[in-house]
Every structure is written in C-alpha cells, then in structure tokens.
Length: 289
Length: 233
Image (cartoon, rainbow over all chains, first blue to last red; front, side, top):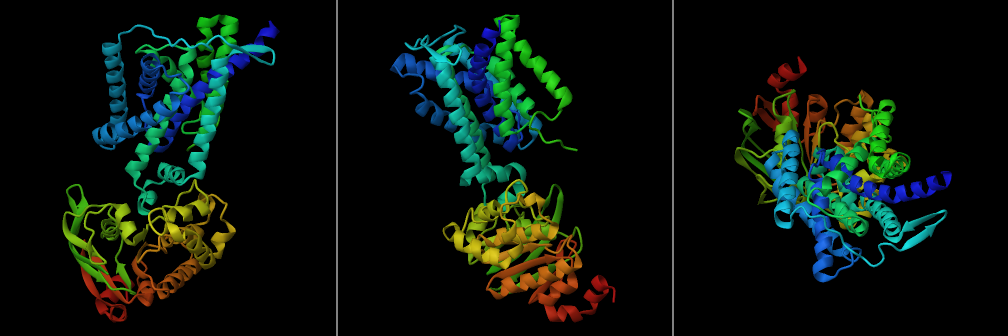
C-alpha cells in the first residue's frame, strides 16, 4: 500500500498545479477588484473549446495553442470587464455578483446550443507516454502541466511584484483614491487585472485538455475547487492560492486512493472544513477585525 | 495658472459648492481656509477630476480641464496630496514614490527620487519598509514626496497638518514654504488658520459652499471678521 502513496501524491501535485493556476486567476480578480467572479469556470470551459477547435480544425498541438489562446482570453477578459461587468454593475458589489453569474449562464447555454452536450476529447500522440518520476510513472502531459503551471505562477508573481502595471495593480487593490490621484486609470487597471485572471484560465485549459475532456458543464467541476482553493489559501492571497491548490490536489489523490477514484473530491471539502475550523481566515489570510 | 469660475458641485441632491471662483498665479501659495464640512475637499476633488462639477469651469495653464479625468489632470501638471494621505500601505516606500511618477515625469524618475530623498532624509532610511508601517508624520512626508515625483506645476495639499504633533505641524509648514521657494505653486487647504496665513500669499475663506472672504494673507490676519470667527479674538 505504502508503495502507492508517494506516486499518488506526485500525481496529485500535477492536478493541484492546475487547480492553483485556475485559483490564481480567481484570487487576483478578487484581491484587486473585490468581486467574486462566477464566470471563471465558464471562461475555462470556453478556453477548453478554443483549444479543442484549434486542434481539430487547424491541427494545433494544445501546448502550441497557448501563445494564441492566452492573449485572446486576456483580451476577452479585458473586454468583459470594460464592456459588460463595469457598466452593468454600476459599482455595486451585489450587482457584480449577479452580472458574473449571468455571464456564466449565458456562456454555458450558448456552448450547449452550438456545441451540444457531447463530451469531446483531444487525442494527442503522447497522451499515454509515461515519465518515470522517482517511484512513480506519471503521464507526460501531467508532468508538462505541472511545470508549465508553476512557470506561469512564477511569471505572474514577477508581473505583480516587479513591473509598472503590477505596482499599479497592487496600489489600486488597496487604495483606489490614492491610485487615481497619482494618475493611475483605475478602470483600465481593473480590466487588465480581469484580463490576466482570464489568461490564467486559458493557459490552464491548454495544459488540461490532453488528459481531460470538454463539455459545456465542465467549468463547474473546476470552479468549485477553485473557490475552495481561494478561500482555503486566504481570499486574495497569491501564495495561499498556490499552496492550497497543490495541497488540495494531493489530498484529492490520496482520498481517491483510499476511498476510490470517484470519491476523491470528498477529501477536498473535508480538508476545507477542517482547516477553516482552525484558521478561519485561510492558510495565508490576514485576520481582519 | 489656475482659474476657477462659478463651480457648483455636490453629491446626490446636495450642492456642496455653490458657485466658487478663484485664481492662483505662478509661484504663489494660496490658502483655502474653512472648518469641517464647508466643501474644501469637494473643491479639491473637482480640481483633481474626481468629482465632476455641475456648473462652472476650471482652466489650468490656459487649457480647459473641466471634467477631465484624474489621470489627464495629473499629466497636465496638477497633483493633489489628499487628506488622509492615501499612500499605498501594502507597497514599500520606494514603490510608493515610484508610482508618483506613474503618469508624469517618468523619464526623470531617478533624479527626482534622489532629490526627494534628500528633502526627506527620514524616507531614505525607510525605502524598503512597507508604507503602512510608517508613523503619521512620515506618511505625510511620503504623500508629499509621492506628489512631487510627478513634477507638478501646481500642488494641492489637503490638510497636511491634520493629525500631526505640534512639532511636526511646524516642520510641515516650513517644508511647504521650502518647496514653494523651489518654484512650485501651492494650493494649501487647511483648518489651521494662523499658520497657513503665515506662509500664504493670498487666502480664501470658504463658508457654506461659498467664499466669504478673500484677499492678501497679511490683510486677512488683520481682518476683524476672520479674527472673530476663526481665532476667537
């Protein structure tokens, strides 16, 4: 039995890296715009279809689709915030919640209408190529997904902490008026931030599809785990999303090992409740009065 | 350099400013005095583009900036150091100063940065520290330093002495005088009447959304109405 635990944990880390990437986008949007983006899962679904059709119609390898899908979804996210979410919510947080929920309903049903509820998969030649990682054999796409997701997280961290726009994003997140008065365009910064969050989801879709599938409902499976990841890590915390994403991936894999594959996600939510009992602000959350 | 004519502005059904006109010439320190709630901050926010006026016009350096966006106004050379400082507590002192040059004077960021660190040696000692951990006086220095990073032509200071110890207040007014001597025009919005008039060229007294008094600062200090209302003499 113990010979199975380490391989399961390593496999869990590769899933966890995707959770972390999806959650990083969500936590960035929450941390800066202070909105909960219900459309996050639907955007992931759209990106999965994007990669799928690029592959089927134009023969693009899912990984080579990243430089196309990620900028495209950055623009989509930017436009959604600028053109739909900001104008329709009128600055009220409860409205934003409804607008993003409405967007997700519209996207999901448009997908259902145009692409039906059939489950689609991308068949790549290397899907079952196994890589020996210590004691475990892990499918090549999962190994790639892990390292690519970590690379993305590192790039995102550099952008937020080391660039001019990153500084502006952090400034707007906590001191909107001060940011306006130094000449930062707050609405534009919000949209950039939403764009970056959406691009994270698009990269996740490219990394995911070689070992996963796409249906119009596929977003739900991820968005629930992504919300859990964000809350567990501490709302708006970058490190929190990263660590708790990886942690939940491992917990899920271990539960899958002991309780059976289909019950793996039980572990995620049990861990969630237990951790929040002892750390109500999440792993990296700051306690507020 | 700044001409304000007939500004009406407010929130909801209320007009906080009911027709305010003023002007600032290059090199002046102009004080706007008044107690809480008479519309001082609303006036600043109209000048900075955060509140759109319902009537009236603002001209800066000959151009109409009425209703322009805050970033366009900063780009034109009008910066505000707001009441309550509004620094970025989650960023370091260095990052706060760098963001001061976000919209203007970015090319000369390094030399301006050095100059501001020379003006505020306390900030230089704390460049790597998060701004939220600074004392009140240091935060005010940082807010002014951040404002100066944009090389403004006119700097609005909204209640810079608020919440500072008497010693720091003294230092603050000396500092305002010093940066004015370096050629910067200043609009000083204050409740601290005596010290403001001590350094200002001219002053306006705002009451209930209108200017009740205006004139040379020296004459104001001698004005019996002002002495009665604000100094209790």
